[in-house]
Image 1: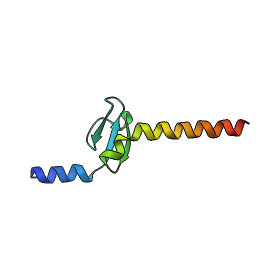
Image 2 (image 1 turned 90 degrees about the horizontal axis):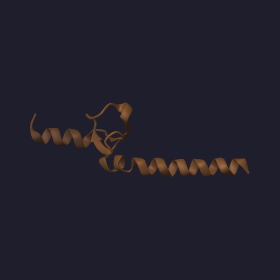
Image 3 (image 1 turned 60 degrees about the horizontal axis):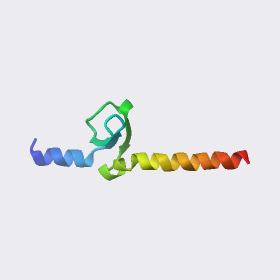
Length: 68
């Protein structure tokens, strides 16, 4: 396989955010138990922690509203 083929394969594959190394990884990386994903793009994977924090905040606020 040519270098071009490998780059296309990675760019078309799935992306993950590694919680162990705190970085975005292609499909071949750390075990899935240590990662968030999969995501369809490297940029989407890079935002994984922020999206999780935003969702947790929204859920916490919804729980507080339910308690009132």
